[in-house]
Amino acid sequence: GLEAAIAQSEAAGLQTELAAPRELLEALRREAKRAAACARLEAAVQGRAIDQLVAAIEEGEVCGLHEDQVMHTAKQALKLEEQRAALQSAVSQKDSEEELQKVVEEARAAGLQEAELSDALRFIDDLQKEAARGRLRAALRSLSVLELEEAIEGARRVGLEEAEVSSASRELELAKARAAIER
Image (cartoon, rainbow, N blue to C red; front, side, top):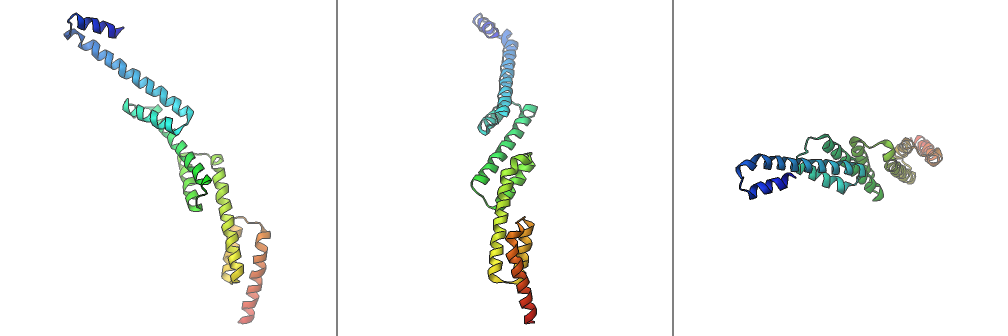
């Protein structure tokens, strides 16, 4: 090939005449590296593994693929996969409702579909309902009209069944009646 011809020419002492072929050979090597980097980027996008995406993106940057479409696609894929991982981690670690909400919003912004958010959204819903139950229990202990009203409103807002709210509603009516009698 071209390399062998260049080597033979060098051996024959034709150094000056070899500048153009050497430049051509280097250009071909650079293009081969770019093509290989593009192929690895495409494979990483298909595989969706974060470590492979990171490695392929780094290789693409070294090869000068900064603005190529395949590089853009790989960076988007990496962003999505990182958000999927963050979402999965937040749910499995049972993060706080606030942290989960933040991760869900970031995942939405990154382009994850609602179906992919369903476990996290269900977990947030469960956390909200459990917190509402706690507020109902506290309000029932206090028998404060204001606390009962707020707890009942909050419980209904998060979708607790009316059966879970009914005892607090009864206590609210009794608390209002006691307050009216005391006036």
